[in-house]
Image 1: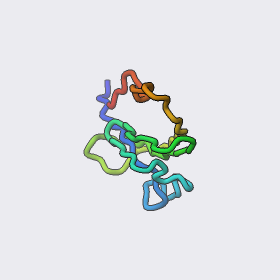
Image 2: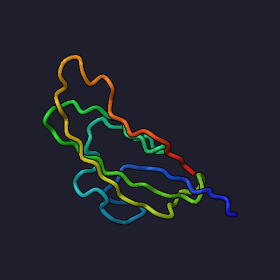
Image 3: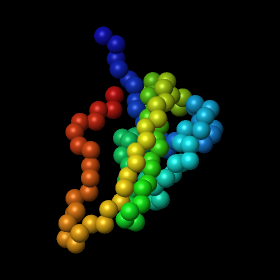
Length: 105
């Protein structure tokens, strides 16, 4: 069988100068102040500091032939919308997380 070498990476969507030659985020580029993105495993890390406010994340998930390639074979958008709630005192000590196996092959 064929050896699978595909590598998935995420990046922030951007207005221009990208593989898609398009505005990928349409007004929500870097919509979460202070957020960081770990590109190799598509982990988004942030804290919403204001209750009652929406924040958007616009990302591109890209598929590369191998980890040494710099041009993706595909680039697919994904967007999330988050809403900040005021946490009652003494609760919400565990942050939200997507759990399970996330293979990157």
